[in-house]
Image (tube, rainbow, N blue to C red; front, side, top):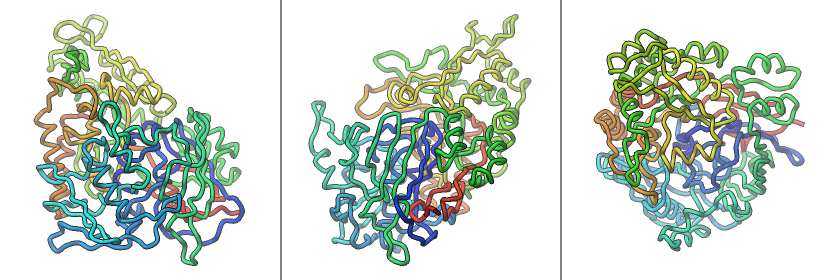
Length: 580
């Protein structure tokens, strides 16, 4: 599990968590063993570098040089055999494992690593979420990656960078397949790589290095993965991993349907939502499954207003009237006080959660103590609105200083019942303080387009995955970051924006993220990131909602589960077995 995997916008729940190596059963699975999971929507791309969403297939199909063990939080070897730091901590010399292969049987070499970093992740013609997390220092310098010999790669940086080692865990891609698509350009002068390996690509053309390869994709139906016969990892007896030969993802567009399929035996695992926890808990024995509880989830759930004042073709992305409301800090604070999180916890989460306070996961050592959050307080909310120049008419509707009724749209991904319930409650809660909210669940692709391309949304209800390392969120908090969603820059190749403003607090958080990555002393790093959390709490680019428990139901036939909130049930999938 790498920083790249974790920091993705969560548009729906994925029952399968990304695989890592680890200690598990050593029993060889017999026959054609398989597991079946569900996802809510079709994948958007099969290109690991261009992916911005979760779920994606890449935890099954690709590995990097290193990865994080979710039980210990330590960085462990993957494609790398070993590594050494220079005395000044500015260089990492990585030695590649011997006899690595791609799924087509070709050798995986140092040249693939050099190509992946220099031609893909560090190529400014290729938009990738990974690049922001690789930036070092005030200048935003990117690491230098060079070949030392046929087994070794050197990564070097100009100044200290605390997440240096973790950041060499990005998925490695095949040079022999993709190099030509970087060199060749389309009619607009863009690399053909930008259209490479879309979801219309025949699966046999997608060459991988992970434990599984994609062999079949039927739109709106399923994805089928089979064991990669050239996967590098073997067990202690020399048996080829993974043990489980086939993984099937059923595309089920409704969480209620997923529950029915799991209860009837059609699925082998399920992310347990609070509304079904009590029912499923009673059925554990009869259904021959176990509900695992990893404690507080690592992810975040929030609403966010579009603070972007930019224009495209001289047309504002957001109605200037509404943009003025959204950019008023007292307006955002009033909304934060106006949402009844405890009611969400009691009614939607069935008590299986707590109010969320921070962008940094509560289980991370960098989570700031002493954050107060925004307890439900209608009077405080109304007071802030009046202080900000808003007023109420005789019917209790909230008006701005020019008499315009406060009304805006709230969007989220359709099919996620928890999100839809939260959106409905937010609509009700904010009506109490006079705001009219038009809650609109959208199809996945429409939502993606609004967030990434058109940028013409008003307020959204979404989430981000989390982890232990704060710098994983660099692309969210840098003002020019690829996931700076509340004030997003234009995508490379799209029409540019004019009049986009970046506030001082926004710049400050970005600066602190730079400083935090530069600082090697743990306690000093903690204080730097604590300040980012205090600023986020005050200025509310994201209004955080509820931190649920991490719960998954898994069939007892699957042996070797070592559940954790960070890795879920299947972080060591390649070592799990099926009991007959």
